[in-house]
Length: 434
Image (tube, rainbow, N blue to C red):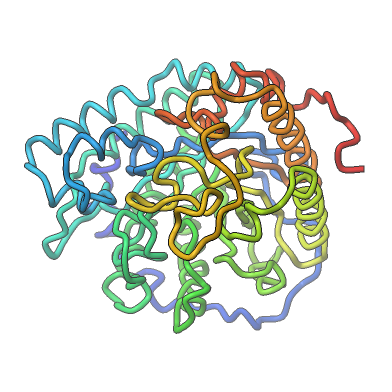
């Protein structure tokens, strides 16, 4: 059933239902080793092994650089400017073609054939609500429904990831609007986001989705590092989202993001049995600082192994949540075109503002035909180190299944190139983290 059908119904029936539901994070915690109650997917007892459908229902310049380069306008850097700084009929035509062709059912069949069990689908708030002159082009939600159908056809579970919030929760181009972090500063932004979660919950809590939509993630990567009120607003939003999901009696899992905070910041948040079916998501990239891109390949592997142990230690502490690593990759460098935003260079080759030269990017990005056997061997070792490490906790979701021109980021190309195994449990280096 289309999401749009439920918008008015959800708002009419549920508006304000949980507006004043403010459970305190300081409520007494009932210690328990249980965290889930009859979830649609047995998180915690079965490992999550999945991929993100990145750059599809929300644009990312580095995933599909041609969409941005073809505009001829260097000021088009995110979906907001993609929709506002070019001829609108052209933008509509381009987006429709992209939505119809970048992912098809054959991708979901291949994901399942690769031994994976999850697809995380990022989508922006404007697929469900635009107002106040926002320039976004809508129409993504039918493609989300179609993708859920493809997942069902191939035995995959779907995480619906609200990747972008009104006002932007992190200021990244991946939030749809690069710039200030304004989501937590206006109550209208928060109200709109809560209404979208109600809409998603009304749709996907239905029994017809029980074997396919396992989780809703209310926000991707809120920028806790900016200070101000974003962390308390995010924490309250997680509690409100829980209520908005549970109002239908849904067993859909809620997935929190760590907001770039150490996991200890979230000690005891939403524990079972006060709350049920809640997971934590943390992301692990080793490319977005000079210190990280300066690491040797063995140091990257050691860092991945240590990170997995730390995540598992936190997740296995009584009162804490099952934890997945919802984004990571096999490349040790920020060399992909536009990965640091359109118009910016790379830290690794010193073209990013304020960075220093560590090496040359050419051999490590683009077509896998330029990748050396040594680089491919390292990426295989890095894949095995990270998956083995992250499976000490609840599992992992790779970023991303496919890219237009940067094979080092593509799970699909990794399978073809041999640095990702055909079976994600296969090990050439079984003691990589020993």
